[in-house]
Image (tube, rainbow, N blue to C red):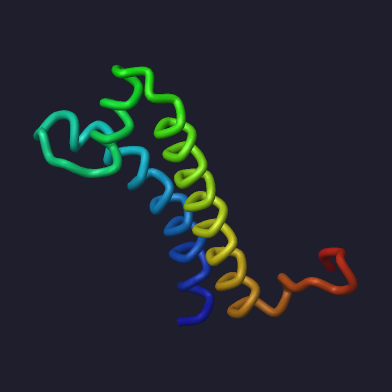
Length: 88
């Protein structure tokens, strides 16, 4: 079971990032309010602070999702670990 979880955790980190990127298309297509439609509207109105905030938020979300994925992989696989700042 432990070995089967490794690819699931690795793909879930990438999938969470794609979920945020896909929200822009979904919200624009269906007219739902959310961060994606806020970003599109801010781009149309050239509201640069809102665009910068969206890019910053999505970048932080991307980093945290990948970081949590890496932590999960390191917890399940003893071959993946850090030792004095270097991977072993």
